[in-house]
Every structure is written in C-alpha cells, then in structure tokens.
Length: 207
Image (tube, rainbow, N blue to C red; front, side, top):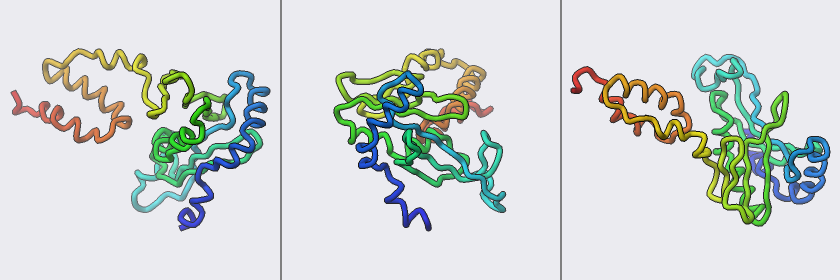
C-alpha cells in the first residue's frame, strides 16, 4: 500500500515546526489578530470515491452525503503540511481522527514548556477546537473542551445538565434516558457493553 511506504513522511514533522513556527505564528496573528501562539491549522478532509459494491456504510459520510476516505492534516501559514494522517473510512468523525492520529501526544512531547494552540480551519472561519497548555496552567477550557497534559476531554460545565439528569424510575423514563445516551454514544468507548444491562430492562417480561 502507498501508506505503508510513505507513512514515516506523513508523521508529525517536529523539525519543520521548530524551524517555521515563529514566522507562521506571527503571520497568523497579523492576519487574524486573535491568538499569538497559533502556528497552524488542522483540518479533516474527505476524498470522494466511487460507490462501493460492498461495505457502503463504512465509506459513506452522512455529513458530506457521499462515499469517500478521510484524511487529517496540519498546515502552517506558508502552506506547508507538517502532519498527515489517514486514510480512514468516510463514516468516521473528525474527532475520531484526532484521537487516532496521536497528534496531541506528539505536540505534548514537543512543547513541554510552552503553550500551543491548534486551530481547525473551516470554509467560513477558523474555530479553535483544541487547546493544549503545558506551562503553569494545569488545564485550559476553551469552546467546550478541557485540554491538559493528560489529554483532551469535554468541559464538565458543558455537560452538567446531562450529568444531573434524574435517575429513571420506570421503563418510560429509562427509554428517554437511553434515547439521550444513544445520541451521544459515539463519544463513549465500549458503549454497547456499558448499555446492555439497561437495555435489557426494557423487555416486556422484566418487572
């Protein structure tokens, strides 16, 4: 496979980041004028493929409404790509690619004494989706995400309403709770195994 031959060249290029990060950060700050420590933009893109005969659900992107394979790249202000990850199935979410690429771990090792802000570029604007601070601040809260040395997690304040959901007392309330859980299941590891005992309580023969 092509990926097997060039995957070492697609990994996070710390050498190029060290060389160009200051100039890239300055150029982005002069253009955007918001954050002074942003040296690049992260973007997940899909490349359309022909409609496959088998395994269509794996390649189909419900968001883009087409079949394809996805890649994740980090691009600096000069257009140089310093990281490329993929391909993965088109059905996967960008957050899944971010986790699988291990790019946050690479940045954590590289920036042991600095603050790094990583942006995600969209067609209309640039939204900060990941913030990693490794200096005096133990963690950073930004746009619903809490980032720290241990990794990235959801801001607890943003999910306080879900956490305070009352405990179901009957099958109707349990069904409502499971409906919410099913909506968010993509963000939970081994969801099927965790939810199985509660799903069995919805059976008619369960008192």
